[in-house]
Length: 473
Ligand SMILES: [Zn+2]
Image: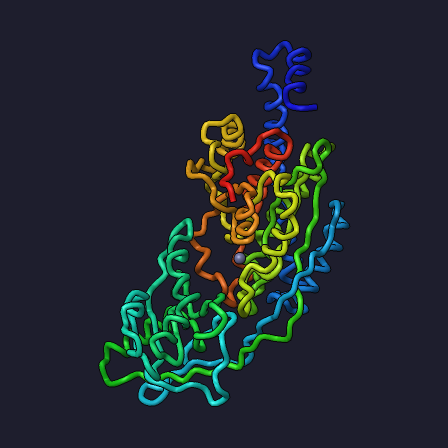
């Protein structure tokens, strides 16, 4: 039955309602509210984070640990009753950090709390020892003339600003991804940056850097160690010398994988809404907030929908993307799992109604953005009616993406929506050894699941069509 004929039936059968269009929406809204309230009372998401982080610990892309977690996921999702549960393999070379250290040598000699950047190069076995050239800002490094760093180690101390929406990290992540390349272009033999973190504890933050020709070995030091270097510079007692060591390496070509599961639509199973998170993590913590949380939130939301007496009209698919965190040697790029998924839907993009991802920790959701054209739509009003009571604001700016793994699909023309999480504390532990389940508030996860489940139902059990207004690829 299409929307019009449903309305005709409703108009005939529900004469007590003045506006037949609202009668159908009212049922969808009631179901969405029930899903929301069920999740708020206890969603089960925390136990999924617990299972993944306890059983598998760190899950670096392309490793046996990531594979084992994916295979466990297949069994778990089948046991929970999801449809079409499967693995989607793709090629990937794993990177491993090996042994590494950063220390000040000579006068004021002392070890620093540091971590190699993901995908970074090894040093020679004896290490690299050189004078540090310290920049307070990233722009300071960019302004340094060519050859001005020849034989030196470039050090950038710029802080990352705390912000609810993560914009501080957004503007500073270039220092990590491009820093080794910019330092090398000016003759440097090594690169050290203040961790992209918003706290003052002594955990350094790793994260991907560009892989390929024209880079140098690269490390992040903890914020207190960056402050220590600043004080040593202020002493003005001569050059600071650093020694960097790393045995990091890419392994032989191997594979990673996405885990895919669905709740099949009861009327239009070919119309698909994709949600998910990423299963891989960095190697130091257990990847609880990044991103077992996102997998748990979206999977628990879909499980609540799977447990309803009837499926939604459209299909909802959850993807546990692999290999979100890592970059790869040229010519490959990052987001290998997301690209493999986008390739797999390229011939049926028109069937893809919407996509989003949860990949910003486990903090509460405070904002909803939808594809363009939805401001003041009936759908937007219904969504806000259900989400406002749990603290979600309408963001009138159209969603440009749902998360990193949605990027390649959005580039094909799949419309994105976004449930924005409060990331005020996210970059305190992001990509550190302290990214563990102890940092997660189960009640905040329940609120996330409530918002996801309710919104998913409204999209999947309706005729709302974001595709007409989606940007053309
Ligand atoms: Zn992530």
